[in-house]
Length: 177
Image (cartoon, rainbow, N blue to C red; front, top):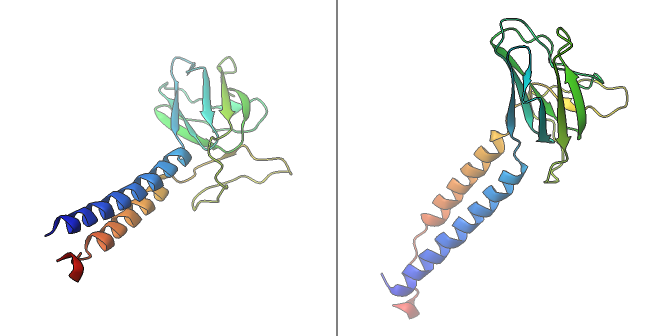
C-alpha cells in the first residue's frame, strides 16, 4: 500500500468522522433533559426549579400519602401521585408556573420554563398526548415519548455511512503505482 493511498483512506475517515460529530453535536443541542422533584415529608424538593422548553419534570412521591403537582393557573396537573410512585410532565411553553399539592395546600413550588436554545420545529411524536385547548397555547405534553429516537436514527445513519465508505476499496491509480 502506498503512502498516498494510506493518506486517502485517512482523509475519508477524517471527513466521515467529522460528519458524524457534526450530526451528533446538532442533536445534543435539541435533546430535552429530565428533571426530578422529590416529594418527601410533605414538601417538594427542590422547591424552585428552572428547566428548558421540551424538558420533562418527574414528581417522585416518597411519602406514603398521595400528593399532586397542580399549577395554580391550571396549566398542568399530575393528578394524584400514589405513595412510592411518580408522574411526569413535558413542558412545551415557556413561563413561570407556581404549583401546589391539591390535597395538602401548604405544599408549594415554582417551576420556571425557559425558551429552548435550539429553534427546532415542534413535532407531534407518536405516543404524545396534548390536551385540547380553548385557543390558548398548551404549556405541556403529558406521557410523551423520549428523545432517544433521533439519536438512534443518526447513529444508524453514521454506521451505514461508515460501512459504505469504509468498505470501498481504494486502489491507487495507474499514475500512483
